[in-house]
Image 1: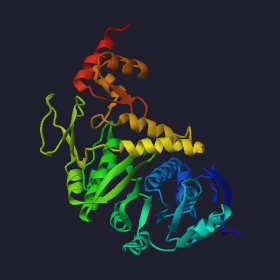
Image 2: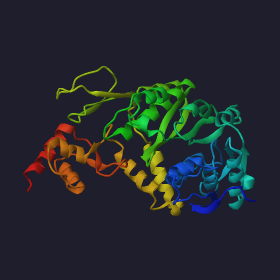
Image 3: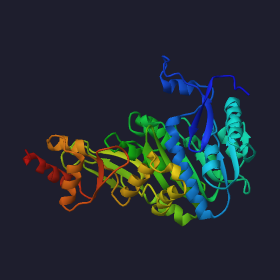
Length: 397
């Protein structure tokens, strides 16, 4: 049956999908065409969906049983279909969307991939759908919230519709507020002030974490970040929610602030948001409240990486690269450094990435690359110690 608009067949993971055909020669930018299409499908978000498959596989392995899954904003159905094809045994898969066109296409795609009898389609608002599953025996093991913009309007219903010890995935694509372009919007949506600077994307993840952890606490759950990352135009985080006041207190005790001096690049975590002046004489900028703990769980992230061995079609993907780099970042202090920013501060010509890492390590400090972008690093050295290291390059012809 024709959906009534031009479509094309694409392959993603193990799924074949009918999606709206876009015209790369059209005057409208491809992103504008995508947002105006009858049904939304974004190929750029493949990495997002790849990580969802590995996260759910890891979660299932720990549960050793079939699970119930919900994607309340399914669009073309690509995520739910791929989860059914690639993530192991799923007992119930509920896909919802307020758009009849989206549900019709999701149904066709399910038929195309032989999983239509394993999917329940619901033409409902996302919050209403999740609210209808908030009773004790109607909840899900895993809910994937991937809206256009901020996920914060869906926190409450997602938490209420998820089982104790269940998993919730959140995607936020509203990067300008999270990265400080519109601080007031960030405060309204996430309850914290962003920081502009070289590590703004890490701050964005930590603001997302803090906002969800606080909301989970209201419902009596401790939300533990299992895997968090930044890619392309979004931040993404997986949380496990567990009941218990002691666990909640432990999480809330790891929410605080980051103080940052854009002049000398000094930065440090703090439990106080009182304004202060940096040693260099400039006023420090304050971001937060935000999550100061680890952005991922070691055991869970290792499990995701191990799962690639059971899903070889995901080997060598961007998701694998991000997970490997995120694993290396664990154990280091909050925030990261940009090599070019340090070079500019010190007044030396651009130092190669290899030479920068070599010089830091030769001085006795640890340094690892980050997943946020190239030429950035996490280290146990302070900015003052890094300045001393980079000053050595002044004497190199």
